[in-house]
Image (cartoon, rainbow, N blue to C red; front, side):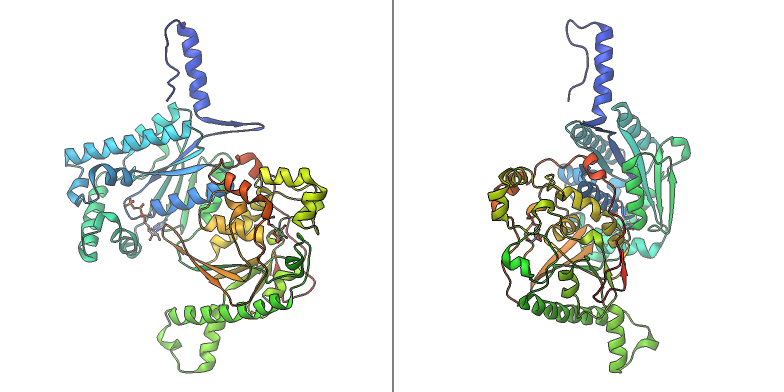
Length: 511
Ligand code: ATP
Ligand code: F6P
């Protein structure tokens, strides 16, 4: 790390000035037209309070928005340097060796995070209990000395049933208890929590810091001193999120007339094969829903042998269906008997002057457009149309609404749009998003879990054109993989305005 410190031959004043400017620039991300202070979210709370869960959700959301974020988890440092099998006594605050070792690891992790911020990271997420005021004070002053803004994110949960479920779901299966049976793991973890309860202090206003307190999984949220765009985004994300696992189904529309001719965009109808996919999708969703309905707990008064009751409970368990406003997506869901919402934000990327053309005719008649898109597919905006960053920006309200839903959702949209939503759910970088392979006539089932989503793919048995990539930009896609995320300024364009209701199709509401 550059220290900005004294070097031979420099006057004291010059050194002080250099130091001040190094400190200031360490904490600030500068890009043309955009500058924001770097931020560290310091997680706070007893073990098994969902800190890692929330830290990873925020990391995924912020990266997807284009704000480079990374979780630094002190527990991983402990496992790496001391092994995974420390007993509860290691966490006893009256065990001086354990306390010293834990503090050293916490500092090592903090150093790595500040180095990462200095190398270009924008939001560090410091994932540890940080449950005592003294420890938070050291962390906060070190970060602020580097010009970094600090936000405490505390999870408080006194619901014993939730804590028990969290221990069983994540802790008893963690590497800490690989060789221990579940019952012994839960008992040891409870002792670990009891050790952390000694000296546990909630964040106080006197700590002079911005904070968010999530109480009993968001049944109450307390905010203090929230400032700036990124912190505002974090608050609205946390206010929408919940921890119920559920399935999200993603599919492109059935094969369209323009998929066959290779034309971009437009509002074409489905082909006969596309219409067959619409039937196959309905059959698939009905089968999934029956399984889901059968797995739902039922009250004693609901138990029945009646077929009519069964079909009512399947109907109630059907996913919400979200489509774009374009014909091909609405025709694809036409047979699914459920609430259907039609979003303008789910319309395909607007190819501007290239709408209706094929990739080959774009390359021939507008070689500069084809070359510029190939060089930077993520940021390149079609003349009169959109870039992938524009699409991601208009998808943000869809993502927040998706987070809010507690039951299953089916989204039928388009190549670029499904790539954007898939990238969010599967934690893919913005830069890799334009090259994600989303074939036609395939359903992606993504089930949300404690630390991320689980993916299953169902190619339904209806033939379709292989139409999922820009053939001439595949190399550029690969070159962009792992590249730099787009800076926040580009991601800040206003979201698309609510759309007018669609004219036909089985649309009950529009957003
Ligand atoms: P540790 O300090 O041991 O690392 P932790 O606080 O990081 O524990 P997690 O590992 O994140 O806890 O616990 C995951 C579990 O917490 C999941 O089962 C998830 O459903 C649940 N969870 C997520 N958010 C919350 C919350 N705000 N309050 C309570 N539980 C939550
Ligand atoms: O070809 C189908 C399609 O949905 C077009 O309408 C759209 O322009 C294209 O895919 C988006 O994919 P890419 O960004 O790879 O060109």
